[in-house]
Image (cartoon, rainbow, N blue to C red; front, top):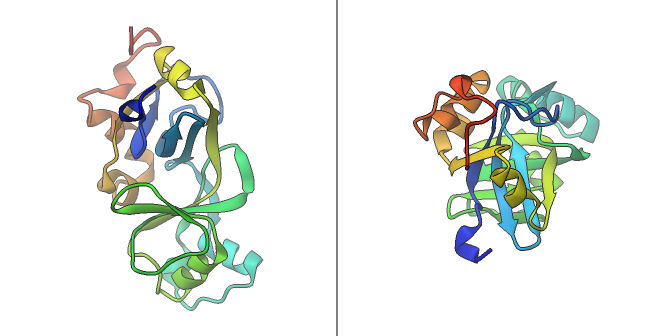
Length: 188
């Protein structure tokens, strides 16, 4: 696959027939995709935890009730004990960040959580535990077998769309009512 065929900074939409319980009815932000594989963060599966729980576990102080109530997401089945933050770029440099696009980074270091707790972090962010990963060529095969649709990343879906509406909203970008698709729909 040539670099122009990689789907970095796309939204991956699970097809309705995808039976894997880790991904059923999910939409994921594809943060890396290259010859070695892919990494994505599921953006519509809240864990039931919030940032206040994470701050408490990590002994990080915050005075903001609003920040404490921010939901934490189940980012995927890999390294679920590790946090990943998809966020808008800012001038600050974090210990462990990778650029996803001109406007989005993915960070997995404590320093960004400390900045968020002080209300000095990025303007927009989503905190997740774990990630979804695919080996070389695996995601491409799954797309060809109708497991996934992809659409360009949209800031509003990640940060402004209600969690329960993100899956359908991502598909709507393609002009698709995802709830009307059958197992046979998709790539031919």
